[in-house]
Image 1 (cartoon, helix red, strand yellow):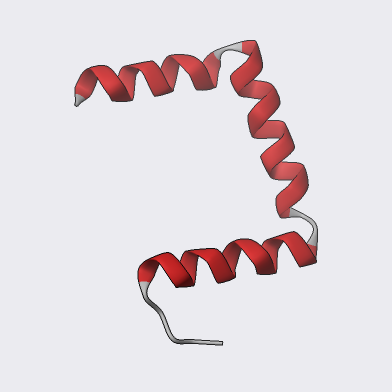
Image 2 (cartoon, helix red, strand yellow):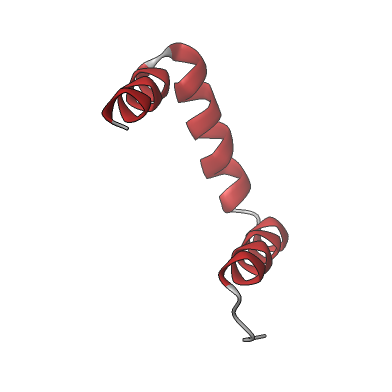
Amino acid sequence: MAGFMDKIARFLHSPSGRRLQAKARELSRDPRRRAQAEQLLRKFRGGKRH
């Protein structure tokens, strides 16, 4: 499992990983997108909150 985590860490430090992080930050600032993401997380976690 450590090899997989190392690959993720290397990717996040690469130029394309940095671009992806910047895009995720930008999208997370949009209230509608944030609500969609929270709804998806609740669905996967099995939460019943609205």
